[in-house]
Amino acid sequence: MCELFGLSSKKDIYLNEYLKTFYSHSDIHCNGWGMVLFDKEPFHITKEPVKASDSEYLKSIMGKDIITSSCIAHIRQATIGEISDDNTHPFVMYDKTGRRWVFMHNGSIFESDVLKAYQYIQKGSTDSERIFLYIIDEINKLYASKGENTDADRFELIDRIIKEVVLPDNKVNLMIFDGEYLYVHKNEEKTLHKKDVGGGVLISTQALDDEPWEEFPQNQLIVYRKGDIVYRGEKHNNTYVQDDERMKLLFLAYSGL
Image 1 (cartoon, rainbow, N blue to C red):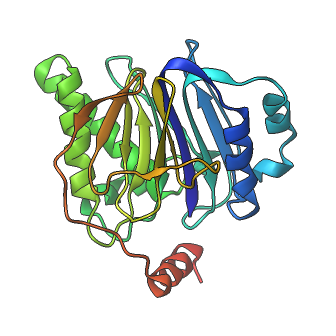
Image 2: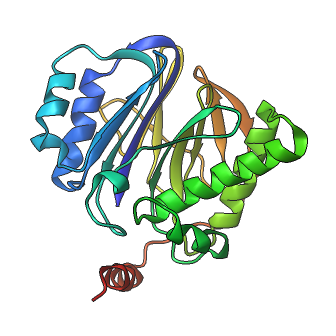
């Protein structure tokens, strides 16, 4: 699969050691890496469809102090979609209000009627991109009907979409940043963890140091602003349980084998 990393904080946090450990997992998750620092506008998405530990570009970034209050990062182990720029996370899109959204996903979608149409218009070939396209379409429809998108509108809409997509057979661990808020969801046990840091929260697929990390809440959308929880979605019951045989069949189907 993939691994996710996120930070939401009131204060700047020194991230080099956390990111060094995170990207060291690219020995397994070797099909691409990405990072976004959100302190400066316009924020810049840095990503490559190469193994993180082999990237000279990433080494140059990590050779400088990374001190920030808001960040997401991703390493990819491909299950659906070839190794390419278009399939490397995070993905970015603008909605019709001009808001810039950033999206990354860890999981696989075995079935979802609402996502099928997007395979014909997406740039890449991942199920992750299809979820993101659906989110932006629904954001734009909401704007067209109301003439605005409030914070509460966006929270409730993302919560509703996750519940549509996260059927029992679908793994939907994701992080989304809309320019102000960090949205986080997981539905497989022990696949996302969090740690409080001064004035904020670190979130990662695996614990990144020897200090205590808590398991991230299960089956519930949590939204952060500067380290504080501002929204908790209603919990659902669609927990994903890894099925290695089904994963093999999915891989073969998308590989054309």
